[in-house]
Image 1 (cartoon, rainbow, N blue to C red):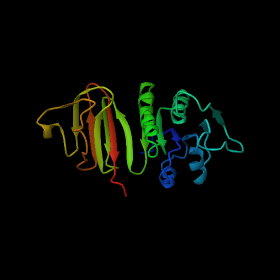
Image 2: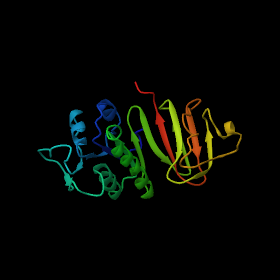
Image 3: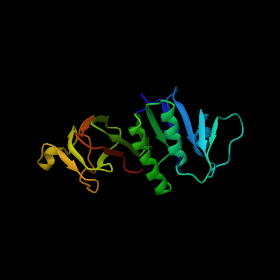
Length: 215
């Protein structure tokens, strides 16, 4: 997952899977901590290149850190501001860790970061050991790193969806291709038959959610 990543954002969701974070930060990646995300990095012996925070969920760290502070009362989360900073620095392949779980409103806000990245020319993935989220515009191939995957129309209807290499394809529904409305759920709980799946969409953007059963 991490071979193309040039920037990793570590967010402050209350997750304890720091081993997953450690294993998925490439050696040469630029690291941004969103608020208390810097504590996760400290726990695995890593120092962020930049901390973006209002410090409402953590104390400001002591020592030599590159910090960009924001007021608590603002119109974007620390994670979203971290994504904007990564995009402004020219990074094209972003990975957000520590951003799932905890408050559902924060999780949803983090998912919306995928849209901002895509609209600004960057690929973005949000992941933990049980979930991986990304957007598909036009075409995407992905490996069987997780047990299940689901496809949802992201914000607007999606037309001309084709699925290859999975158990459920358009042929399962008796069609050459599928259309999905944002409120429809029949793209859920699919799985890759062998090693790889390819999904394409003629119009619209798909939200791809890959999942494991929780252990």
